[in-house]
Length: 106
Image (cartoon, rainbow, N blue to C red):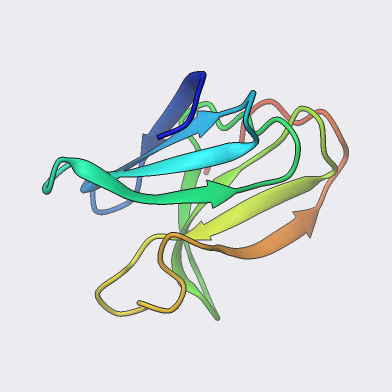
């Protein structure tokens, strides 16, 4: 996957575990059913999700969100490869936010 995995959380289905490699500015998406890396997502500087936040975006479907210590965005990553294949394991939106966000929760 990537160096320095830090913290993360489950997607809404509890199949995928999304974990920050904050020294690499990446999120590793682990498929726990298949036991393998599903995606390695590039993000803005120093993602720091805590457990992350899950919600259904009106345009992109189920997403998982992370804040960043070193960037002024909250990153949304698509998490539904069944019904939203084009968005799964990808950054679908970056929402402007104040820099230095530690955790996002719903």
